[in-house]
Length: 168
Image 1 (tube, rainbow, N blue to C red):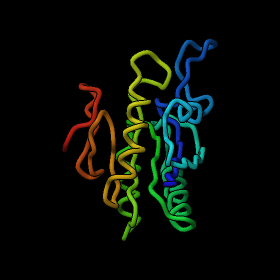
Image 2: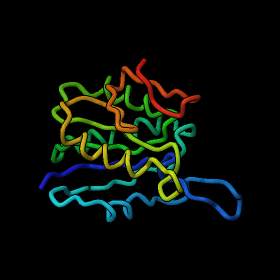
Image 3: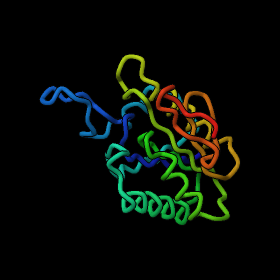
Image 4: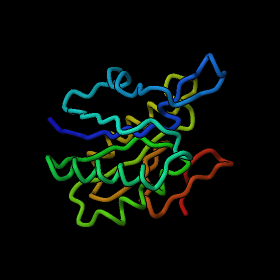
């Protein structure tokens, strides 16, 4: 059984529609229920709900919390890590991880969605599934996995016009 840590931080992948405001918001984590849709017979997904924020609202202190959680997991029982994160500042968090964590023995994969999980046309489940696979297959390092592509975190940027990630 392969353990994979998943650290949920919010972002569009976790947004839900609020009938009160008519907007999509980060109200409550829903990532766990999507694992039941996947066939993961030899994977143990250990989920940590760290926060549920839009990445544009994330602060340096929030990124430090992500780093602390990653350090804790790599220190206790090391295994690959997937971090669900808002796409607007995903690269910022990934660069902090890359700069702060030397001699990684496992990959750290950041992923998210342009459209929330459960919404028609959502890319969330695809990105989540591909990230779980990538975390088991990639060499140690920090990566962004989105839309069937893998990018080293220091070689990627979000292209807002195309609504996807591209090589720098």
